Length: 305
Image 1 (cartoon, helix red, strand yellow):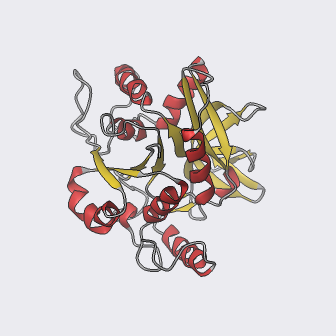
Image 2: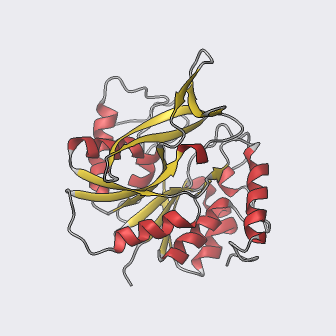
Image 3: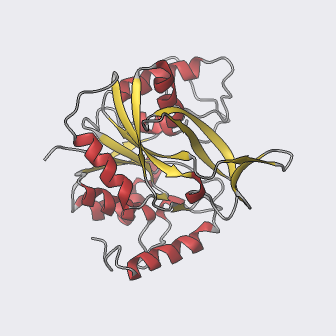
């Protein structure tokens, strides 16, 4: 069986969640956290290694809640995202409190992940369909179209909006044959009477097509991508216009630049599964209801593992 890894980004700090570690919030009928459902779906799809990206200070608690449970089922490894882990010649501003974004998070896996891999957020529920599609893409024997041959789960915008406030998504453009042509990280996406839009600073809303593709940070990648991330992080930090207190090195931006330069092809694998997650504290009540419903419908067993 070809080795494939599930990489889970769980090191982020949920500033809008309102306390606690949202990645480890018990939300399933038996106290499961969201990523346990993603792990279940990924293993079912054929992935056979799990890599958790966490902050070092949460390691003991993380292993107690999730890691030790999963280590009895499949190979498990840990990568640590550290705000101070910067390329030679760069220093972290003392006032900065948050890590440097999803690009830095995945870069922390270099040397740990040496096989094709899928990367996801710990606090998003993706459904089963995308895991199956991405795994099939990663193990398929095919001639690469470009230097880098990647894929992504293409969620539909209207299926990914929170009822409790604005969210950030990578808004995508696609070619007629289903390949990514552009992705723009877009904040303050909200529900509207007609579907979805971007809420502007003055309170007005710019409408978007509710059926457009968005990235939920669910990418199918290969180990060569780590070299791209490493080089790109230096370029990112070297930008004189960078906001060093709040700027983030973001995965969709890195992939988007590869697509624009013609170095990468990214196949959009459409999924109609409905997203849910915990951007805001209020989201957790709806998420609990959704997981209970999925269990009652038989989508998940009463005990995941």
